[in-house]
Figure 1 (cartoon, rainbow, N blue to C red):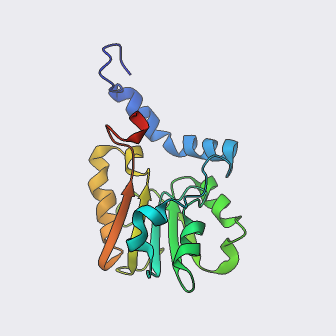
Figure 2: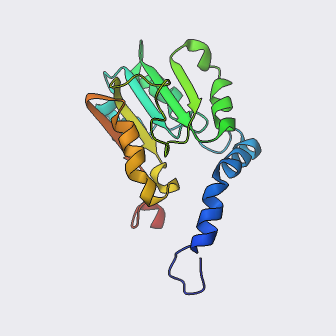
Length: 174
């Protein structure tokens, strides 16, 4: 932040951080492994109607899989999750999870700000529920429309996007 206290990061600092984002995220996962984020069992209470009875999910920004595996438990049976993360190390942590060999998870590294990022990884128009938990806050605002366009391309008719993120006045500020 600059000395004016307006909460804005200087443009040159923001650009430098964005250019090195992949390096920083990989360093984070190398240092913390799967010990930083707890399994997200809370989502069933918040997004239950969008999970129950659904079979095909996409998690954008999956990290170490803290939503993937609880989601599979709640959805049950023949459900499957496509998942991606910016950090290659996070993707490897998901692949090393004991539940990964079930064949119900497809995980891949992806920069979701790049057009067509899901092509070849997620079939078009099949995702019933997309989870985006603390993802958009890590993306430059001018790139957010492209991210949502990418998600739109894999959503099935009637599909939904479940968002949880930081916001001014949220519970983190209280």
